[in-house]
Image (tube, rainbow, N blue to C red; front, side, top):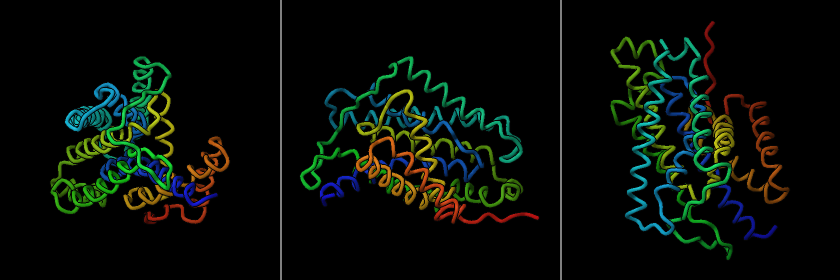
Length: 294
């Protein structure tokens, strides 16, 4: 394999991995404040891509592109916050019930069905705002570089948010001790609802920026959900550093497997990596071992 081919695999793999990392970060924002895994994340990512298809013309300029991004972010902020209300309403606390399994999966199924009714089984094609970039003479969509930058952006924004804002500090307090946070007077449900909204913004920007290289179709959501969740488990559930590392590993290895052996072996390589990590470090590469109460 030549140097230019390896460079192409690396760039495209890191680009796909950045999408998985962003899905993982959207998981973390919610799970750290409520213990809920939002299994609608894959469908929400695709919804953002479909909205990009609807709002962007064949050759968008920067003004139209920016306005479309803002509109999609507002739509998913509202929708995911509404989903948060439906998900959190039946719960007395984050650990007493598991109705969120049903509600989050139901949202995923319903969204996929509506997308299928709108566009059928065909994939939507979204125009790129930037021209392809040459990597060792091989053309590479600029969207790969944009989603890599977006993953780094959200990593530092979320880190700053947790450390410097009252809501972020409250989310950290809830993650450490829910009962103590309640005793301190923190409005737990409002904080958890804010986490859903932030997760929606992460998915909205990911689906919009990555739309030119994402497989936007009714059935694609489950694939992105599984890849993002796998990357998160490998990196360590609850850790955004783990999400970045796990996303990069899954993206590069799956891209290498597709190039070297064929697309049907992508999932095989990814699952092999997942099994290997769980065998030797069940909490993930950057995850912390959970304390066991006895």
